[in-house]
Length: 355
Image (cartoon, rainbow, N blue to C red; front, top):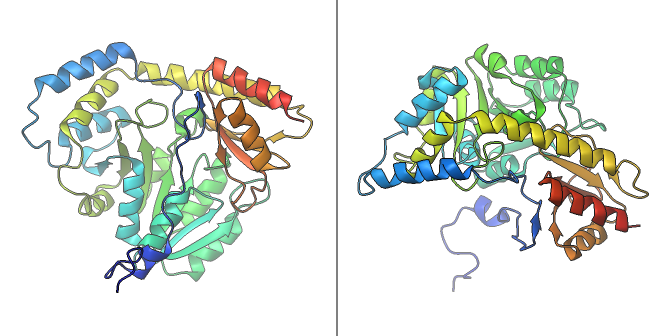
């Protein structure tokens, strides 16, 4: 008799991989998912809702979100034929693993964004992870060696890094990317609005390169779900083959069109996040037992002697954060998203209570 936990026909790689490692916790102050602390502006919601209501819901949307692709391309200064849209950049990561990882290699660092490794394991790609340097910087020499020693596939370079928030020197990023001939190179720039980095020109310089970007973070649209890739026409054309037809719905497309017509709020909010991030890091700099790592993202790491105790203490004060202490190099670490000023004040007060 078949075990219901292991249904017949499921690939062994799928059976062996745990589900995405996240359990929702209901708490008054939610700082655990790197979301924007601010909702999409209310006046723009009204405009977007009106546009949704005016469109027919009984008809399929654009085959490949073509209208929205034109808008994204205009905003980013990119050729529309080099833009690929999906419901979230995590979907693009899955498709990139299908594109260049299956039967080949997924190369990244450790620790890294969990979706890279999850999709590599689910799709039975060869996963190679190179440890970051002790200061969380890219191990340039070791990555170049891994590029030489492994069958080409997909290389992920994240700026700023997740989950550390570290930003590398441009020269280091360029050296790794330029060494990856024969690979698909993905510069994941999900948090670039908070770091002031921009690798579009480096992507333009190579046919094998893509930039991943998202509306989930600085744009405050995580609930709408849209991520996109910017790349060469040749590479985008191949990636687009893997994107299901009609994958961006009419309602999401209407909301995102309104956002792209009114992008001014994004820079303002990103600037506030940066100010608040630096304020919190400075406020906790003299904590007797916790250490806050510098960050250039909309989150930061706190290293504690006991992550479980620190996590429970914050939760008892109504603040939920994300434990990262099970990851290599992150013993005792919690990841904390930058909240509103009031939420950050609550976090600082709770941290100061802990001795």
